Amino acid sequence: MKQLLLARHGKPSWAKNSLDDWDRPLKINGLKETYRMAEWLQNQKVSVDLIITSPAIRAVHTALIYAQTLKYPSHRIEINDLLYNGDKGKLIKFLQNSDVRYDSILLVGHDPGLTNLYNHLTKESIDKIPSSGIAGVKLKVKSFGNLKKNSCKSNFLMGPKKLPKKS
Image (spheres, helix red, strand yellow):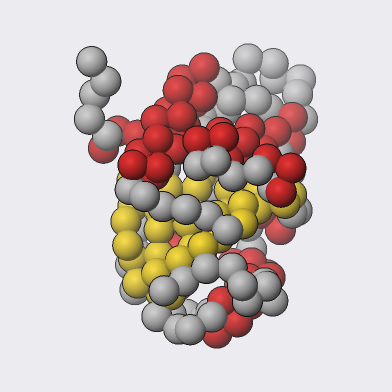
């Protein structure tokens, strides 16, 4: 069964207000939470065939953490501007045209775009995917080419605050 994973970037740093939004890095806490989430996903025995990320630095860094943790070759990460603005219609069209050989795609991006996509594809209605959070959906259709409203079933929604505390 095909699956789509939606990972929201970790908490960004606002330390330098002069930085363009695209250039804001992750905060230290955002890094830690993203590593914990990637480890959680790895423990769920999830693998990915393709990682696509927003070009924003904080999203690229998040994608690199997932790639490292999931043993995905970082040079195969695709950067796509569609994930910066997160228009659900454009993202669905993009996914509909993805290579049929992919069974599991991880999108790394921003809110509200990822949450809007999640709510559109499932019958769920969540307020937001939390910072560093990840949502997984299973396709009820045979291919990404058949994606449409309510064509997916929610598999999980996990955020760093739901993880057990590290000792």
